[in-house]
Image (cartoon, rainbow, N blue to C red):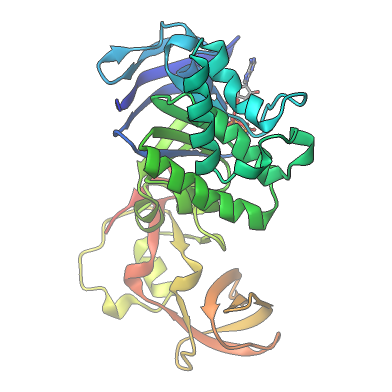
Length: 349
Ligand code: ATP
């Protein structure tokens, strides 16, 4: 199965630049998630790959073949949308068979592939039902089946789970990943849901206002973000953010100056980022904060602290704290992230 290459692609709608010089390479069989807020251009990238929009600049290759000037149907790409797009008057069996019928595949071959696909997706006993008689998850499975059955070189999935409830979404996430790995089809998956991105992706590409901010594995993006936007976008509860005059002041503020032996860069104003789990409670001698909230999440508590002029979120506590209580805490210096206050770029120590 060929890899996919987007080479310096740009797209305008009228005077509006929607995508700016995006370059991305997908390895054979990789699942890449495009993650970003609404309107950042994710769907437009999928539509450009599928051939439903034309590029203003750049090129798209599948393996060695340039595909951006091919007709959509010659690209061997299958796209699945959030609203399923099933034919309501056709049974599951006929919905699955439809793309093959259109492509002129022989009847016996259609029958074989419909049976195989239905089995793979656990739809075997629903074949004679119409979409209206199916649950949301089953409908989404039929939509996936219609994409799989064409044996495409590339899957494009556009928020395929957003119409499903939370429980079903979690199950379908696993199912899509299992299928994708089983079929080994290179896949671009669009979502604005970071949980989907973190749990499903081989790599995530974070987009903002038509620009690519960072591409990396979920762990890389979480632990080693290139900029404040990526750090804030990924992680639940969100990153704690505090403005400081410079890096040295920040270390003083968090009482970590004694553990810093390295020469600190002359940074200028910085934004300090601290992950909620990087704050360690139960440090009686540490910094003193006041508990202003305590949320129970089953296996741990999320604590809101007021400290000086700041509110800090702390996750992972396994003890319940009372609102109004004073609590000591500390932050390990190596867990603190620094970003330039002007550019938002990460400053690595
Ligand atoms: P969402 O998560 O809400 O689907 P998205 O990240 O997929 O958003 P796109 O649908 O790619 O974003 O849209 C990117 C920008 O391009 C938006 O500002 C949108 O309004 C604009 N846009 C998309 N299609 C067109 C079009 N055909 N004509 C004009 N503007 C468009």
